[in-house]
Length: 280
Image (tube, one colour):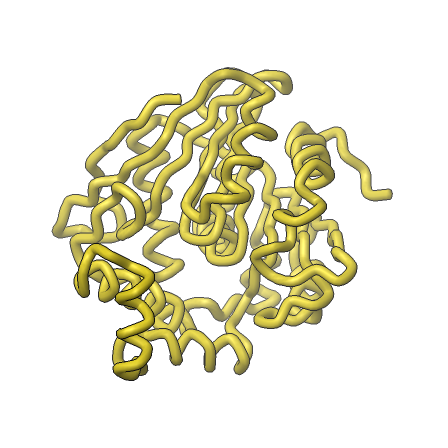
């Protein structure tokens, strides 16, 4: 796996965005191997290719699988850091799901990748919903994990409480014990949290908008997600024309595929992305 960096315009028409990503073209096994690595690393993405391009967005990370010739057995993996994460810059200082989707589109354009198969978790899934509704022809298949079409009140309350303006001195003291790179690092983390609060309005996908998602879509959701209730996944499933719903019993949010389901998830996602999966 190699580390690479490219400069694009992304969502900022008047500023250059430096996007850092990892690249792996080792083949079909990389999907499972990199998923296991990403389970313990919040900022990972991946890409596979042959036959399809796969974009993996886990929380604030995106992975793209694509860029090779048609082949159900071979994958090229691209794991980008979204703006303001890892090695990627953030010229505007802002971070929303809509911006992230525009950045991903710019990255795909730069790499010459026309179509992708995509996997996204939480904020990654939100980013992919923007991608799939803005440029549906570029998405061959979607796997959305713990994603949402909008922010319900409990999620809005949480995201508003994690902005810098909402912090108390005790909160700062706690953060300083956890993060040793100074207050600027902590402020950067608060800015990322603000991105979710700033996304309240741009995460407002109506059934009509979701009906424009052309790609076969597998929706994976826990029935005990504390932020995005199962009803959201049910309505998403009803609105996206070609979609399947996998409800994980006792499943929460970010731990949905990290604890106990990793192997099953990799097997199911891989089969789904190959196009030969049928719902039990």
